[in-house]
Image 1 (cartoon, helix red, strand yellow):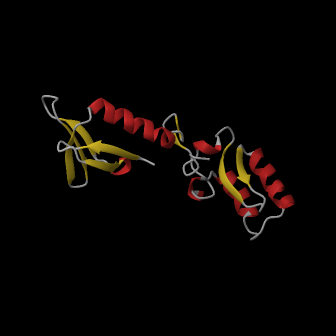
Image 2 (image 1 turned 45 degrees about the horizontal axis):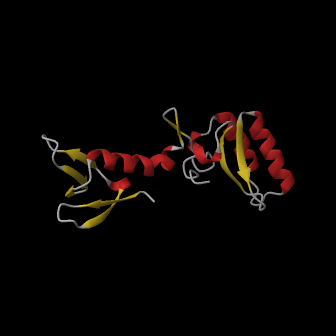
Image 3 (image 1 turned 180 degrees about the vertical axis):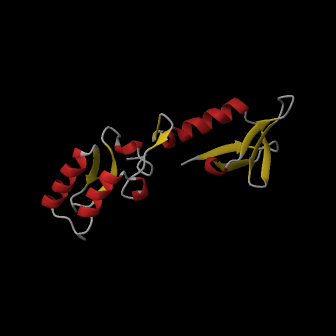
Length: 145
């Protein structure tokens, strides 16, 4: 999880959700570190560098889907980001409610011809549509796959 355990100046421990942190800052003479989220803030005992290292290590899993500052999306979920050629293929094959192994393979081969790929399970349900060369764990929502 993206949580950080911190200690305030009264030695009270608290847990901060990294995703909701607004700011981690030091005062002008570098003696106090203040963590803020929403309208809350607390001065903490941890060093500024230690907090940033902890945040970066916890967010490393989240940042795996960032490649050259580009977020890769599951194009089944974010269909508005599909290029027109891919959109035509997806629209053609997504009409049946249930796929058979034959139809999912046919769909896969057509998608592959235009430079995309996807995964599917034993139920023949497609997921994680993305460009060829992008790993599943580089796609938003599949970073822990």
